[in-house]
Image 1 (cartoon, protein in one colour):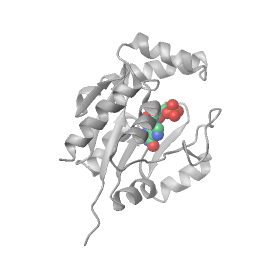
Image 2 (tube, helix red, strand yellow; image 1 turned 180 degrees about the vertical axis):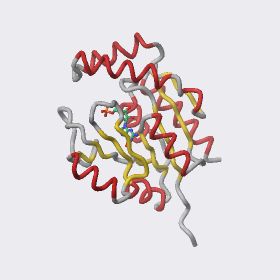
Image 3 (cartoon, protein in one colour; image 1 turned 30 degrees about the horizontal axis):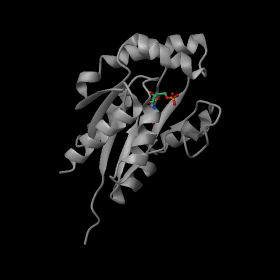
Length: 191
Ligand code: 5GP
């Protein structure tokens, strides 16, 4: 008997919208066989981030040679500041082949690239509500410089314009509630 094929779930939303927290809660609390595809990036790790868990942290050279080798399903220079992010084919495909629901937590342009190749993906857009709420969250993180906050807010403004291209829009007023809403949406889409 063939193994059941998994499903691809794309989660996007402005930086600071709380995607990582919501994904962690989703993985812990949702009964579906969810896994997070660990992306690769050339940005340096933040305090507490672990290589292979939060990201595969790659040097620019290694990233570009893997890009040339076709190892990425999609990859982008997300903030136009020299840092690349990408979904490794090996990460996403291994999960799908094992019948898992593979979550890609990626930006709007990367999401559009993946959808061209896998239009059956379920698409979710998570955001903090207003731009003021987003700015407050970025500041509370205390990991960003003023320049970085300004750049992320500018990108967020642009990203918000993509919200209506997603199947579902979720406002992250509370992370457990947002995770619960997403779990319900996913369970319904599996029927
Ligand atoms: P951060 O630096 O805060 O971890 O992530 C910054 C942004 O990069 C987030 O909005 C996130 O969605 C996006 N991102 C993370 N991994 C990937 C990826 O593999 N591909 C793309 N296109 N974007 C990603």
